[in-house]
Length: 299
Ligand code: CP
Ligand code: NVA
Image (cartoon, rainbow, N blue to C red; front, side):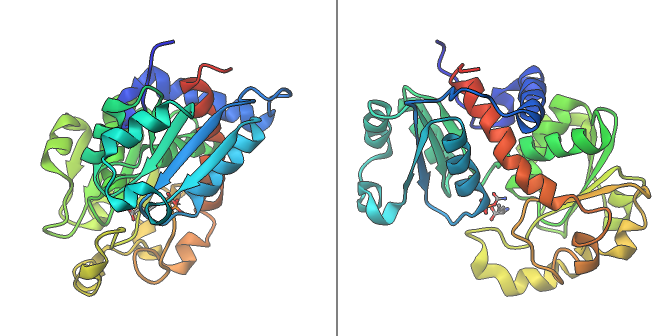
C-alpha cells in the first residue's frame, strides 16, 4: 500500500476531496456494519487545546472498531525534548496512523518525513485541512456542488483562510477575502490560488452576493498575546446581520468553532437561520472517518 499523508488539501487533490466528501455523506447515512478498523490504532499528538478534533477522531476510531490514543507534550517525552524524527519512527512501529495538532507546520512536515504510517494534520499555524473537509461536506449537503460559487472569508488571514485558498483552487470556487491591514493571508499561499482569490478592501465587498460567509476567531491559538490589539484592529470585521444582508438571502454561515459571540460573529448570526455551524461541527466526525478509511485503504 502506498504511504499517503494528509498534511494539506493538496495531498488529496480535487478527486480525493470529492471522494472523501461523498464517502463521508454515505457513512453519515449508513454506518458500516462491520468494524473496518478493528485492531488499528490512531495516535493523536496535541500540542494545543481541542474539543472537536479530539472528540471526533477518538469517537470516529471507536465507531470504526479501532482505538485512539491521546498524547500531550506534558505526559510524553516530546515535552522533554525527544526529537520529532525519533518520535515519528517509534510511533510508526506501534500504531497505524498519527494525527498531529501543533504550532509549527514545519514540525509536522518533519514528523511526516520520518513516519512510515499516514500522518494527518489536525491543525497547524499554517493549515487546518480536516476542518475544511467537514465544511465542504456541509456545503454539499445543504447546497450541492461548491464549484462556481462565491465564498467570503471575513477576519483573520489565518490557517483556516489558507486552507480555503487551497480549496478554492482545487474545487473551482471564488474566494473573496476581507481582513484588516496587516492580517492578510500568507502571500505565497495566496499566489498559488491565482484568480480564484480576490482581496477586498472591506467586508461588505467580500460578502456581496456570497453563497457562503465564513469567519474564525480574531486571535488563533498562539496569537493570544495580541488579543487586545486584535480586538481593536478587527472591529469592522464582525459578521453580523448588516454584513449578512450583503450576501445572498440563502447564504450559509459557517465558523469552525470555538466562537466568540460579540467579537467575530454576532449571536443573531451564529444562532440564526443561515448558520449551519452544528452540522459543520458534526461533520468533522463523518469526514474524518472517511479520511481514516481512505488513508488506511480499509473501505
Ligand atoms: N474546529 C476545531 O478544530 O475545533 P477544536 O479546536 O475544538 O478541535
Ligand atoms: N484559527 C483557529 C482555529 C481553531 C480551531 C486557531 O488556530 O486557533
